Length: 365
Image (cartoon, rainbow, N blue to C red; front, side):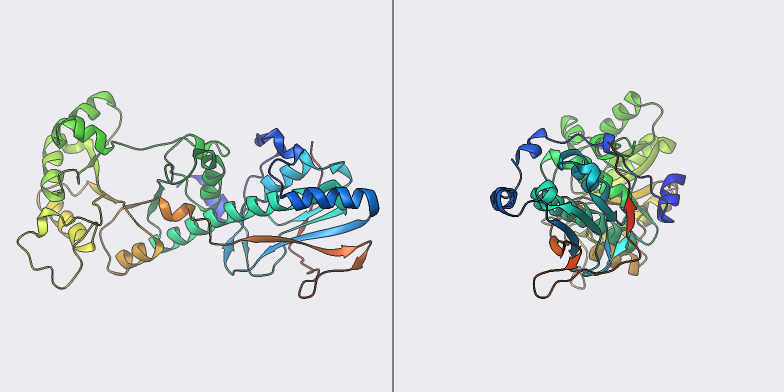
């Protein structure tokens, strides 16, 4: 784990600047704004102009890893009217927040920034959901490496922001350059099933040509193509010796590996990447002198499944996690007006929450 990640875990997170972001200019035209916000802006400009308000953003769950703050501030600074006249207070990306805690407050003339409410909500919800999902996976992994494989679960336009949220939560191993774009990371990875397929299922040939093409890399062999993980792992290890750094098991949950064909599986579920298969794989590698070969697992891993593996000391070195990290329903944000011209004014059930954690944000062009 890099020093920067260690510093980030201690709360020292490099703040992104306005210049980091490339926004769709149509935000300024209201293209992404809910229509009723555009309509109310017109009503206010014509009937209630120059009213000073405070808008407060919060969400309703505990133990959430906040992310999207720098992006939200940049949205305001880029698209609000007279942003230099707005007062902004905010928490920081990476802060842990709880239900109803204000994370961002914007004060000024409503017609200058109110139309950005749903865009800010969406930004905070997406980034914080991803960051929280990643943080939960990391916690379950108990200090082991987690690799983000979330490059194909959503529209590719989400990769940059999701990759940053992943990094804020503590993962610096990602699949694409886009995922590392805001923080300077690069995509990494090894062979896909397509390489083994092009070699007609011959794992040794796939490993050898991969090793030839990338002579400075250790090879991670993808050993589930033939649904015979232990056999193919040993074939790859015997062929590559010290060049084999790891084997990756990605067995579909719909399959049972051939290792179990003559074994009693009545006491557990043998489908997919199960604990029993990984224990058998580790044992086979060690008994054949390949203690140095690490085991990578992927396919449907969630914090619950990782925690189950860890509770049984399953010999996994790296967890690959994809779909779970980009679930977008972990938390949702709301923006409420809570002050009007210096006095408390909010809908019933809402109020201006005073927070000593909020920090004043200086305007940056």
